[in-house]
Length: 232
Image (cartoon, rainbow, N blue to C red; front, side):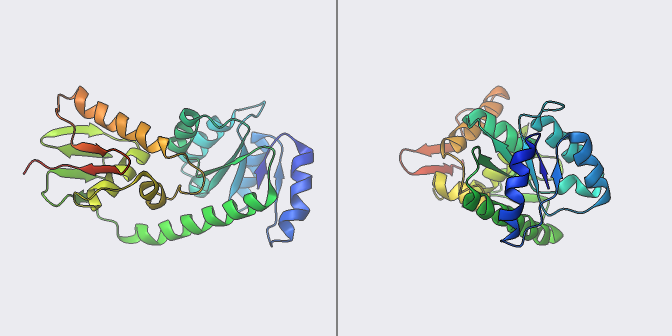
């Protein structure tokens, strides 16, 4: 389904996506979209971020906060804006991917397929995911249930994206992980600037600094990436 107040855009997309076996339903207002989500099951939602009734970010947050079956529907944002900070906020609000306007249809088809495949793989993996991931020296503990990280006795709350990135570093057991590798492992290799990783790691470091932890345990290796430095 596409939620976009531009009626012409949806009508143009329908026959093109049909050639790839995709049946696109149209919604021109958030009210209409939620009515359709209540009645039918959709594989993915294309969401315009600049809607007159409700902005796309609010729509996304409403969907993710819902206790309805559609709460976990993959969401691909249609946006003319591509600022790094806005992308990070959108990702942490529950957006799965982005397509820039004007839409290039081959790219759209590729992203829709990738998002659906990624979500299906995550659904399988979620069957048996341990709550706590511990580094090789047991200094770092990540609680997926509480969304917290503990290092050297200091505990901070993490967003989902922060949690994913720190876990990638923890699973590397002290080895350096490049920005590109981190993006690939968290499922955002295709569309995001590696600078996104720098921004999020800076925020994680700052959270621990605010709790009194010095020096940083996530180390930057210039032109190489990041690694977790243990104290044992």
